[in-house]
Length: 638
Ligand SMILES: *[C@@H]1O[C@H](CO)[C@@H](O)[C@H](O)[C@H]1NC(C)=O
Ligand SMILES: *[C@@H]1O[C@H](CO)[C@@H](O)[C@H](O)[C@H]1NC(C)=O
Ligand SMILES: *[C@@H]1O[C@H](CO)[C@@H](O)[C@H](O)[C@H]1NC(C)=O
Ligand SMILES: *[C@@H]1O[C@H](CO)[C@@H](O)[C@H](O)[C@H]1NC(C)=O
Ligand SMILES: *[C@@H]1O[C@H](CO)[C@@H](O)[C@H](O)[C@H]1NC(C)=O
Image 1: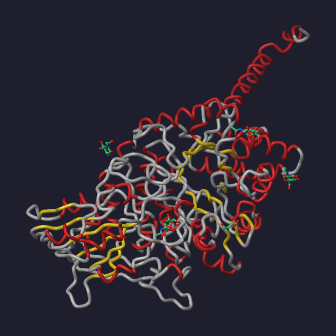
Image 2: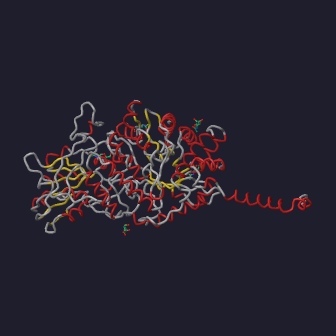
Image 3: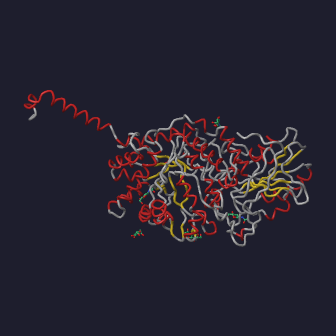
């Protein structure tokens, strides 16, 4: 009340001034600089970080699995990111609508926090949007390297971005830019080539996923061009493809010079192209776990290469710093965060991670500057990609999922990824291209009528699975039936005996065999053999009739023992859902053009053996691939 007498003295002007102050205070409360898209990203980051508590900052660094990401958890722990693990879906055969609703529910939890920082949802879209029913499944990278076609990779990136956005997701853990130096590695099919130059060229998928860098964009700054594009992730940093005997997650023994000249170059390209994130490798380099390698993660990637996006761990990657995993979790947290990891794919026990990290910051074991570096990077990616402006997904891109256009693109990729390794026994004329019009042909083998097998691992489920029901696509058998003349009888017998083959008068046979689906450690193989009854299929058919063998595999397999009986041999890798691309080339609508992006060994005893090695003695050398001319002029490609 001491103001009351004075009110009369100052009267109207003073009242106006007070009123002005009140309005200013109200406006101050609603105008938040970090929410203003007209402000520069740096200003927005600074403004937001000034408002954040330690709890809110640590929350940004946590990525949890969708199965534990309730809106309440998002809100209570200020969680910054959520992922789908391999095969983790909201429902079997979930539609885009189910996906979008799930992502939005989680996002609402994140947005209901005090500062309303949107979460970023990530998923392994490593050969198309592979966890999702009815998505276009592109060939795995081992096949794409064969194409030597960076523009094709860019288009695949464009298509994948649209399909991922169709389900409300803005972030993919791709591309894998591993340089696989030993095909015994279970992830070799995730690698474009044993030759780093091919891997480098294939990083053109990054501008496809994220969009073209604007002119004069500063190197190292992450770039994602808005709502139809997604953040990418170059992985796994670094040396993942160089482990001893190809053992997954094992030790890469190589000099610094070797590491920099073989395994590092594709990171230079990725960073130059504005890749938003980099994932650290489970593997070790000369005995030191990459998840704990400060020199390479902070010293090299961040300081020397000036990478300004965020570094993410692999799934329970920090747990595996110790052996056995999770043996000393607080040590793992300390070592991983100190090395420079910004976002940790926890993915379940977020309270344990948050408690450990919070204690370590409070006890000054981890400096606040390290937390600020991590959060600044995570927020930078979120601001750059307009996540604050567009946090909620909608169904506007739903019809992009598995669209005809994308399937045509995948079919083109399949055609270009095939490698013709043999075409006719020396005395005979070439068997390929096959004639479409004849009386009767045989299609045989474990992989001829199996959509799941031709897609491989990382398809619908983490490990992949056999069968024709797992998603929508065209099997090789179906593609053959689509392609031959209607008068040609196609006999399908998965596992025929020689008597059956001999007693029928087949013009020729197509035998499709290979590896069953696998992913990661489950795919490590010390024998690289074709699984039974594949070898029996080859022997019983090829001994009795002219045959082309199509191998479906994630890598070169041991084929030499069967080679003399085979008339024509095609490596089709893991082509994905568009099996029609295989028939397009077998029957000469298009020619074979693919060149091996890997060395094809005679025996596993020769491994590791890569192009340029001394004593290089392959069955088929790197770069090998016979060609055929199409029957007629090739249809115009669009
Ligand atoms: C590599 O594999 C061997 C054999 O399984 C194992 O004993 C060793 O601990 C592994 N090393 C690393 C760094 O994972
Ligand atoms: C975990 O690691 C830390 C840091 O090296 C060490 O001080 C602590 O004793 C370890 N705890 C256990 C249970 O081994
Ligand atoms: C999470 O970690 C804490 C601390 O180690 C442990 O007590 C708890 O049981 C864990 N929770 C789950 C769900 O694993
Ligand atoms: C698959 O996607 C296409 C293209 O969006 C759509 O037309 C079709 O109905 C979908 N099929 C199924 C079984 O969901
Ligand atoms: C080859 O190795 C795989 C995986 O290690 C194994 O399952 C399979 O039985 C082996 N095959 C042969 C013929 O030894």
